[in-house]
Length: 67
Image 1 (cartoon, rainbow, N blue to C red):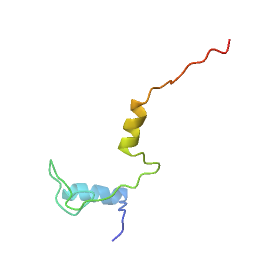
Image 2 (cartoon, helix red, strand yellow; image 1 turned 90 degrees about the vertical axis):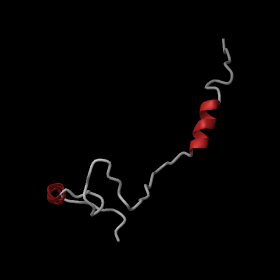
Image 3 (cartoon, rainbow, N blue to C red; image 1 turned 30 degrees about the vertical axis):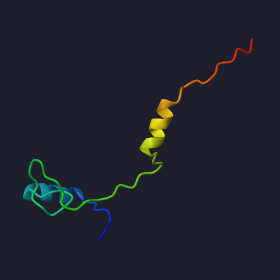
């Protein structure tokens, strides 16, 4: 199976006409959840704990007057 599914405009229209989900072959209904899970590949991912530690650190540690 291909990791990514790219549908043409015609395929999107046909799936909408048939009432099918764009990602899986199940009928689309309000609250639909695709039965197959998928992974997202993210460039430059920053772990949540690194962001929390960065936010906890003071923005300016020391200010020096050069004058």
